[in-house]
Image (tube, rainbow, N blue to C red; front, side, top):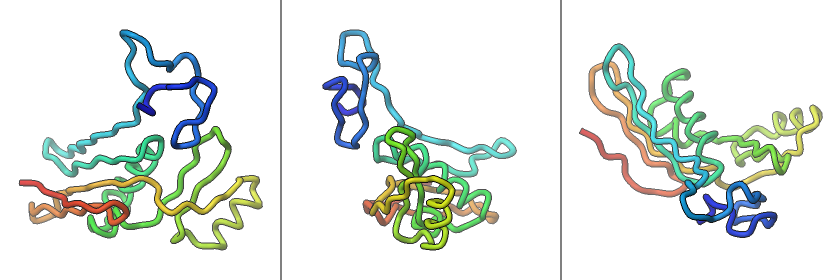
Length: 149
């Protein structure tokens, strides 16, 4: 139910404060960050991925997508890589422990309020590799299996 503002003005389980605009009411849709994603290249499916973690979903999914398709990491490395997340409100930049301490300090010098966070979302990924085989991985932060055919 945290996709609605159960108590407008009060923090939800993620520490986010919702407004009356997202209050529970008839005929309203919940605010959601669900991102089931299908990437198509040249008419063929290149990757499918999705995540969980409330407001962390979008940034976690994007970082895994970049790791796999831009930085060409295999699925296991792409989902296991450390992540960052900025929520805007509250104005805190969350970083996982694997983010370099020097990078965190540099961000702090630029005015970011940096806080270490254990888990920033959980993403499952299946990508098609050059030979047409599927390379899949479940996020070690949460567990599970990546299954595709």
